[in-house]
Amino acid sequence: MNPTALGEHCDRGKGNGGNRRGRRVLVVEDEALICVETADTLERQGFEVHIALSGEDALRRLRSGLAVDVLFTDINLAGAMDGATLARLARELDPGVGVVYTSGTVDAVPQPVARSTFVPKPYNPDRVARMLSEVAGAKPH
Image (tube, rainbow, N blue to C red; front, side):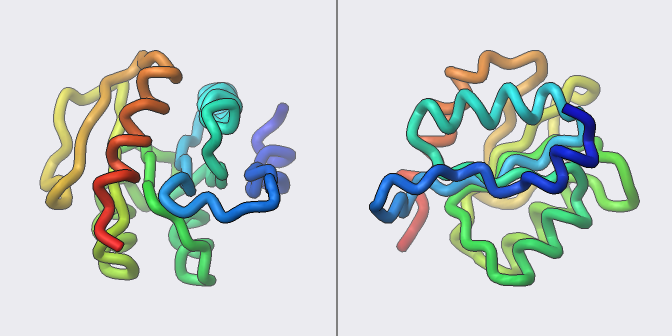
């Protein structure tokens, strides 16, 4: 799937007739194949998944009212905004949103937001799903 097609299909959450409070995740990843694989795994684990290919797109969607429980973001993103900046701005919009960072090029997040975690690439998508479930469960309501 090319990035344009992926960007046009950002809301992947499949309605199951119920509210998935605590299981809504925004995956921000500029590498389309990684994004799709991660989103597919999270959907199989019961998450309502939204995807964005850039920090700017993710922030635009959050500002337009997209409600998520966890932000799962790559640190190094295409465009002017990196994942660390996105996380800070997302927390300004929703102080309780869980944040999980990932990267294949750095070992730590420069100035991470409080109560966040980091998983290095390459990662096991099933392990990430368990981690996101834990982070979502810890979100103050």
